[in-house]
Image (cartoon, rainbow, N blue to C red; front, top):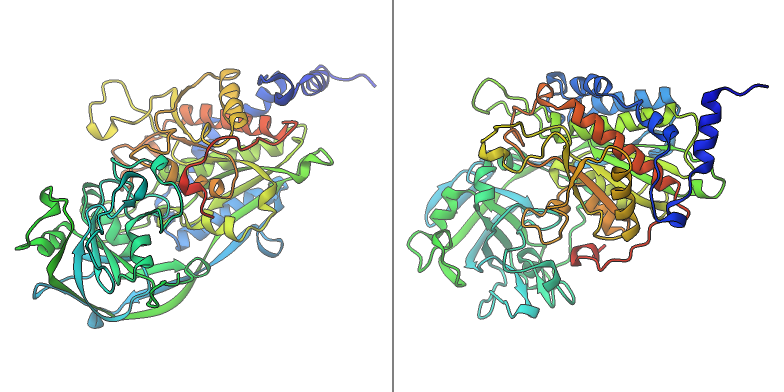
Length: 551
């Protein structure tokens, strides 16, 4: 039978492709480029206008809008022939959420004889404290103890049964509610956590403190509305992730509170020093912290969406390349100023959600299956603290150790326009630029494949400014890939940078640069494809940051 020109081209292109391990070079074939061209700006736009519509209500975790989005993803995966990889032969990995709703009549906060409003002036970020608590307050600088640098803000302080007040310098990330300060790097965190180094929460737990109060920093103050919306009058945790950590001193695990700027000023009014005015020396305050909290508990459910596209090689198909994004955002705030009450989350992370969906569709349309299998995970609850990624890595529905790399897509849809002088867009990437984070942090091979694919394809501007564990923004620790990295899986994270609509109601689909999204998504697709074809899985050959050694 006579073979068509296209069939000959495909056969030649795929069979001629040498593996990266053999050549140390990525070669993108015409056939591979043709598959990637199934990803289009029009397709991405169509999906995103649905996912980021007002009808989804901002896709809070949990919410009806998030559940509808999950059903939309499932519907497409089913019709494209993907294998369900969630619970019990379904596309969903269910997560039970425990919600403690605050009972206003049984809740009060008092400092220095003055009452403050729970949910407006102070919120509980972690811990299961209920009932009444009266404790002294001690101020301990930024709360970080690091023996390798002779830093110990707790020297001379007795913290047992007390509230440790600390002042964080920047954004929270990973497990740390108190950010790493500028005078300490990841390289300084040597030895054992809790013994040789400790953040404030770890120190509190190890030394019997009743809790930690994180004082309003510039980051907290500028995001206080989102903080109160997240923790406010109800607090939710993933039931299986919320097992209480034993306090070595015999008491309950410490509770972590976040304090507003108003409350932080009240805490230090009339005291010997004020950290909000630059005071850094540790001391015990004269005031008591009086807190009474009453809660009502209920259970809710949410889900990760999980699917597999099986590979073609009899041996290699047992390994997987993972591609993921978080499909949640922060929901609706009926008390927000202005007319727009819905945080649509078109860029964060509707862009990643539909990019992964488009990659799945292109894979399903490919005339040939990749050698390795491809794992797709849409994570819920990223905005709540990387819930879905943490849950999936702790309770995987697949053999997580067979995952050779994870490619995370979180915000790839916005571009800085020429002449834009808005300071909030200062770090936003341009139309042919994207931040790439983590590619060189764990595996030389992964970094080379990521770079080589881009160089051999569209040659986008890969900005590695944030590809550093000591980045003060801590972007590496603030998205889903972090928990895969903790599991020893090499990762890469594509990110367009923070902008004026980051965590704002103005993050709408009409502001997305769809041509840029098309280019990035096609490039990530081909990066995935090249990884599925590697002769050997990427080795972890780099010295890992301390926070990746703790799972």
